[in-house]
Structures are given as C-alpha cells and as structure tokens.
Image 1 (cartoon, rainbow over the protein chains, first blue to last red):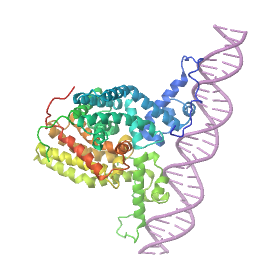
Image 2: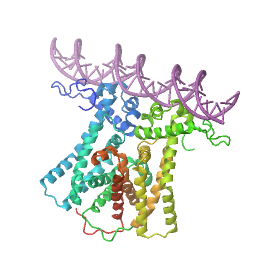
Image 3: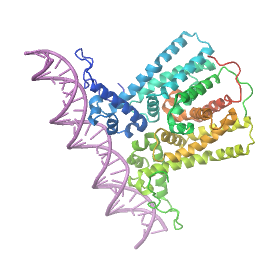
Image 4: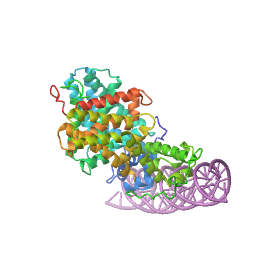
Length: 244
Length: 244
DNA sequence: ATCGGTAATTCAATCGATCGATTGACTATC
DNA sequence: GATAGTCAATCGATCGATTGAATTACCGAT
C-alpha cells in the first residue's frame, strides 16, 4: 500500500464469517454507511482539515467514537470515502470505458463512431458529476483531491487518469494526431472542463440560472451543449474563416 | 458591510496619516506583503481552516503575532487576500471588460467583432489564471471560494459575476439569443470551464503533459485551443451532419 | 422458546496536541 | 522619548483520539 494507514480489516468484525447472519436491524453497517456519506459531504465541502470528526458524527447521528470504531481513524475514513467514490464511479461508467477501450484495441472504428463514443463519455460524465442523489458529492470530492492533494490522492488520481487516457485515444483518432501529443491532452481537458465547471463553480452557476439546485432540464441543457461542442472539433470543417 | 467581520481599520496603524513617512526600510509594509502572499498561497491550497496562521507566518518569515498586528485576525487576513486578488484581477483585465461593455452599449459591433472580443476575454482569462508569477494563486483562490464559500465569498463572487455578465452579452449576440437565456449562461460556463480546468486539476494536467509547471508554450497551446473553440460556436455553420 | 455468555456496538468523559489569539517585553527608527 | 514593529511565552478553545462502562444483538445450550 502506498500510504501509511493501518489496515483496519482486522479491527472490523468479520462480516464474512459463516456464522454471521444479517441482523434484523444491522446497526453497525448502517451507521458505517451514514458516517461514510456524511464524511463524503464534509470532506468534499470543507476539505480534510476543515471537516471535523465531531461534525461528521453529528450529521450521521452517530457518536464521535464510532468513526474510530468503524474506520480506525479520520485518515482511514478519508481513504474509505475515496475508495467509495472511485468504486461508485466505476460502477456507473466503468463498463463504458472498458467497452470503448476494447473497440479501440480491435480497431474497428470510423470517425463518426469515435465522435459518438466521445459524446457518450461526456454524456455519462454529466450524469456522474451533476446528477441527482449524491453524485454531485462524488464530483466535488474528486475535484477537491485535485486542488488539495492528500495522502489518498493516488486512489482518485489513478482512476481519473484511466478515463483521461481513453478520452485521449478517442480525440487522437478524431484529430489524426498522436495519442501522446500535448495538443490532444489539452483538448481532452477542455472537453472535461466544460462539465467540471458546473461541479466546481456551483454557486455562480446556480445564481446565473436562478435556481437552488440542478434539475433534469438543466442537466439536459448542459449535456446538449457539451456534446454539441464535440461535433465542432476535428473532422468537421468550418464554413467561412475565423475572424481576427 | 455584508459580512460579519469586525472593522480593523482602527487596529491597524494609520498609513494614510499625513504624518506617515516611509521608513528607510519600511519593514512593516514588506512584512504585511509577505504575509499576504503566504496567506494567498495557503488559503488557496488548504482552505481557510486547513491553513494555519503559524504556517503562514513561518512561510512569510514573520512572527505569529504579526498577522494580528497587520491585519487584525485570521478572518481579516482572509478578507484582505480576497480583496487583493480581486484588485489584482481587475488591474489585469478590468479595462478590457469596461471597453467591451462600452462598445456593446454603443451597439457598434458585428458578429466578427463579437467573436474577436470573446476570444480576447478567454485569452486574458488564460493569462490571469494560468500565467506565471503568482496569477495561478489568484485562480486557485477564486475557485476555492466557489467550492467552499466563506464569509468573504461576496467579494470574489460579485467580481466574477461581472465578467460573467459581459461574456453572456457577447455570447447572446453571437447566437442571436436573449441575454438571460439559460442556454447562453451555460455556454459561457463551458467556455470558462475550458480554462478553469487547467487551474483546478493541475496535478492531472501536469502529469498528462509530463511537466512540473506551466510554460509559455503550454499557455500558448491552451489559449489556441480555447479560442479556437470560440470560432466553432455560433454563427459559423458546420459542414456535414453531426454523427449519432 | 428462552436463557446466559459473548461479541458487536454505542456512549459520555477525558486525554494530549494544536489552533487562533493575547500579552508584555524587546528592538529599531525618527 | 515616542512610535512602529517584532518576538517568545502563554491563554482558552477545539481538534482527533482514547478509555471504560453501558447497551444491544447474536448463538449455543437447555
């Protein structure tokens, strides 16, 4: 393991034991889950130092000591949140990336297909960063790790780089450029930035749209404009010259 | 005043006094400036709670008590940093926005001009968020205020909204849409997001480009691709249909 | 079915460390 | 001598973590 956190697998009760049967009200797992979600919100919003364990416990309707009991320490809780976010993201968009990589490896893709795949990636990016329920918390947590790298940085970083690499392959094909061309990497970031912006600058976005939170129609609008911009890069020439 | 910070103008020595004369080596002002820059870095990097006054003082080669002496409190220092950032940004790109607003008010702009003005805005956005020296610190501080609104949020927010409004006017003209159309606001954010991404996700960007920090050529590349995308939105129709 | 031992879980009280802030003495400058 | 500025020492508050007891859930023995 890359970071110096103690392994808490021995401290935590053996759920895999053959004698274990789910209790009628399995308090432990539920408390652990409530703590995890409260921590996801707090760490994403206030950062590792800014989020206090007391506040997290209070929001989760749990006792302060429950954090140490269920996770081992504040740092271990932070790591658990990171792994949770990555796991959830993988569950939502992992299959698409794998499918795309497989098709790219096979090589049976023309530019129209590449463009369509790229749009699906951006599409699902919107769904996993700006969607309802808790997915906006995932996005904020991931972006905070970028702005303020912590000991669990590697967990989120390696996951994001995986998606980045797939997008780079698509863009490279679309622009007839090498996969490792800096211009390709930059263009991938501009594509991602279009979506990430709505996750990072939520207060300004909400004010501009005159809303309190994203609705279905807002996501639809963002998705439409973001994917539309993909049509406009590479392969499709422009009519008329650029001004200036 | 909109936020609940005590007025420290009485605590701080009266620099405006007509009896004040600059000392030969004006230690006070220099220390204050070092503290301001150290705080700008720390607040942007670790957030308000995450940044400790002791660390800020240490980085500024100053004593802990110097923060209270020169600013009044940690919160007041935070406010001073926010006002400093806004002032610096205004100095760098305020004139352009004023000029654009004036020309828009006058109404003597065709679409080619609008597109060129929009490119200049994005252009200077790159320069004031990804430039050398300390400007990347400005960008990170501003974006952190968005992710983690603090009592000084209004200071940065009102400034950013001003620029946002100007861009909305330009995009509205370019797309023949109403200024208050949500689609216009969303498109402005996608344009900004292209640039902001490089400020927010620096670790991933640096890794992808295989560098430690931005160079002139990197900024040039980002600027080229970001402004190129402006040519590709609105007014300039596409050849061929969009796939999918 | 139910009782009792054991493990799982929760809880209030408390620890040492660190935080922002304060104090009063100290130095330098005019 | 008066002011501006710096500094080490220290304060109360809050932090993450620990403790030990109380409570709850589980399971084999009866």
